[in-house]
Amino acid sequence: MTDDASSNEFRERFLALRDSENAKNKLIDELLSNLDALSQNFQQISFDREREIYVNREIQREKKLLSDEIRKMKASSARRSKSLPLEREVDCEQDRNPFIVVLIDGDGTIFQDSLLQQGEAGGREAAGLLWSAIRQYAERDLADLPSDCKIVARIYANIKGLAETCHKAGIVDHPTKVVDFARGFTRSKHLFDFIDVGSGKDRADDKLAEVFKLHLYDGHCRQIIFGCSHDNGYARLLEEYFADQATASRISLLEGVPFERELEGLRPGFKNTRIDSLFRNTKINLQAQQYQPQYQPPAAPQQQSVQFGDLCDTKRTVSHFTYVMGFSSDDATADSCFASTNT
Picture 1 (cartoon, rainbow, N blue to C red):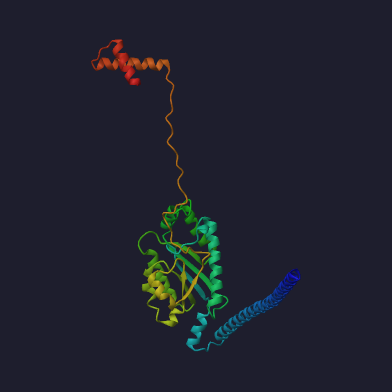
Picture 2: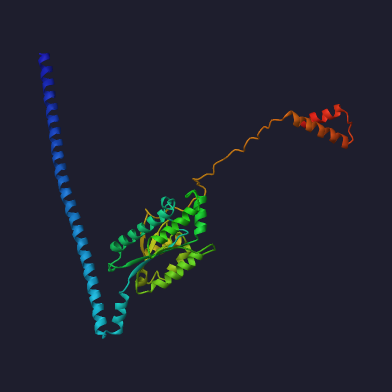
């Protein structure tokens, strides 16, 4: 009787466990089915989203092209009629040759090590990357820019000082790599220049400030992209336009290393961008040197063989020396002096 009861109990427990396993497997099947359905829905939504983005970009591009055509037609009509008011004539003139100017303090906004190490080839590559990055930024964040807007780049730096600093820090194996880099950057595009300001305090700062002011109210200049995040001194320049929203909208701050404290406070009043693949985000560390001079131990003195004739000549010289100095001229004294000389 006891055996039958135990058998029934085990059977019941087995059936309960089997039902539990079946329920678990059924739940897993349902979860997997739901997951497949969600994955398919997500893929469809992602496809629809990409298609919408593409269509929107095409619409924006077509809109910009049409706007440019309308502007050009208006300008052409104005030139033919010769009857437009002075204000509209000025507007038509300002629509000619629009450009974006990129102004960079090259003493603190420094290109990536891998580009500097390539010399002139790295300079050419850096110019191409900068042009592409600015073009993408303009299309993405700067509204109503004409499609034929040119890009002008001016980098001001003490090239000799920068080259020596990069060499001491171990970034390049020879200072001429930085000089070659600047040459390659300037040669790559007609409107790109890497300008040597020479040594002296604030030379790059002063030039940048004057060029900045020159372009800020130029009707042909649609945007100034200003690379100055490393130097609080530029806060004096930018704070003049911080409260003027119309003027501030024409300025974009390009971040290399993190903005210094005063510039960080002004940053919300301007547009901001950064190009991590192009510029360093840390300052140069002169203590981390990669290129160490090779140590060459001093050459061991060469042992020269002494011939018997040389020994005889030396002995005669020592004998003559002992005679002149008043020593005994006998051979024993001379031999003694000769022995001490050899020692």
